[in-house]
Length: 147
Image 1 (spheres, helix red, strand yellow):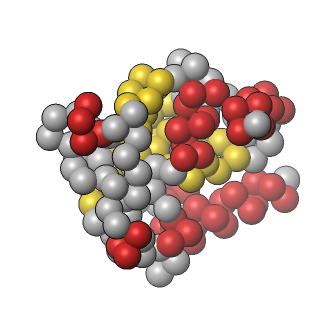
Image 2 (tube, rainbow, N blue to C red):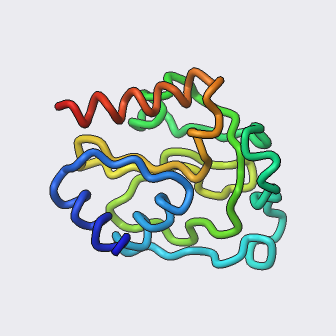
Image 3 (cartoon, rainbow, N blue to C red):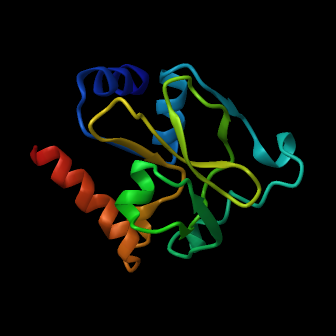
């Protein structure tokens, strides 16, 4: 169901904000692949599967790619993110554009350039409400939905 919904939103131009698994689902729905377990498949990877007790804590840096919609929305060149996942993008779907990276090279943000508003982040911005950049992400989504 999630794959079908992601494809529908992408094709119909519906506002879309993927969070954590939502980024992974969007990538797979559009033809990408995933690392199934970062700890065993990516030598030197950061510990991305932090305990839930750190869900509201920024545990690593994220570099935003210049000229992306995500960089524009967050109005920054980098951000601090929480990290609660053990899977991540392996091969980026052909239609998606890289929008953010962790220091270890793990994809932390993607966007669909041909879409009015389709962004996805690997972290949980809803658990970082004190960060103005994360509030901006949700404001951008609601503004896109109003259009």
